Picture 1 (cartoon, rainbow, N blue to C red):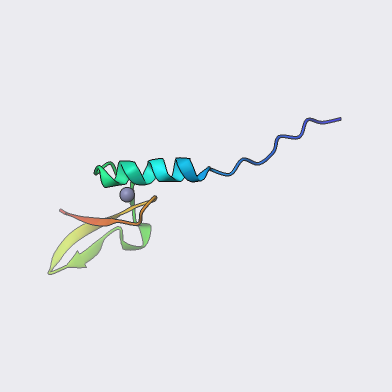
Picture 2 (cartoon, rainbow, N blue to C red; picture 1 turned 90 degrees about the vertical axis):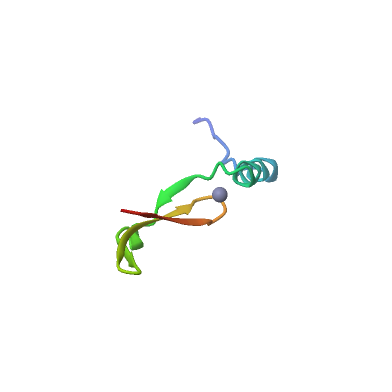
Length: 61
Ligand SMILES: [Zn+2]
């Protein structure tokens, strides 16, 4: 009989911990692929989005 490893969902506490990190400015930045090379006000920018809280930031080139 095969061992059954139960699928473990992240607990509310773990999710809360992530938000705490975000509140302290430690976002989990990922490049927004859809807007990787967006143009804002005539400048090429890369859009980053936090995978936890969906905060966004742009980096100008
Ligand atoms: Zn965040």
